[in-house]
Image (cartoon, rainbow, N blue to C red):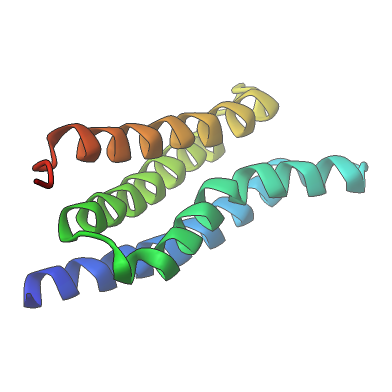
Length: 127
């Protein structure tokens, strides 16, 4: 039980850090963008996987342990992938910001769906 509690704590910290870091790196990448609407749309899209996972985390107390573990794994994975790709974008010149900040949240949604689909497929069936 203690390891699951540690995993939950690490996942929550990673999720908050990943969301904050992703938005900060997005703002850095779009610093010359003058359209407030476009910045707001990108912010919503970049934050969408993090917000969905945070909302799922609120509801997770009633879920089966294996499903909660999948949620925590998705939280860690989304945070790691987002920050890794966005940091690479900040460090490597020439990469198109719009493409990166459109594709990564979409890929994170796919990761979330795969985590939960795998859990459903591999979970023991109730009799």
